[in-house]
Image 1 (tube, rainbow, N blue to C red):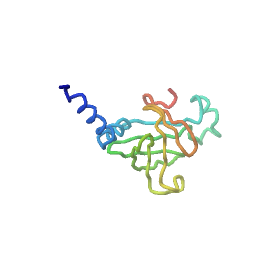
Image 2 (image 1 turned 180 degrees about the horizontal axis):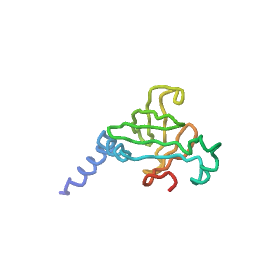
Image 3 (image 1 turned 180 degrees about the vertical axis):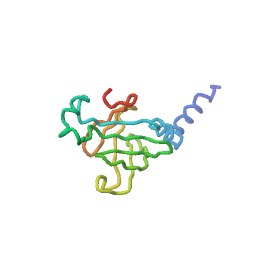
Image 4 (image 1 turned 90 degrees about the horizontal axis):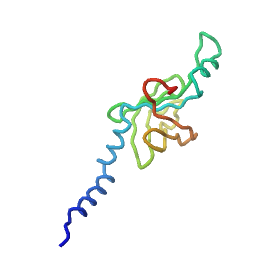
Length: 135
């Protein structure tokens, strides 16, 4: 008689991967992480593009994933707080509808743990390393 342990473990693994447990593991991989979409290749390019010394245009967009599925996004110079969930390879951010996010939803495709693509405009968002967007 063959041992049933490997089959049982395989079934348990498949159930876990498809369950909320598997989903919560994926959600925790974003907790306390930030992703950025820079408008410029370098900090100097950003500084050179500023219109005047007393006025500063944003050089990037940023998402900060906070604990308990909370998220904060900066698209222009306003911070929007919302929530996020993962469905398959999609990361769905939900906010109160506003002038920057009229539908109240932004969707990203998860390419890997360090790279997201915003589905409405195909922009790449990279995981921040340290506290600088230029690394």
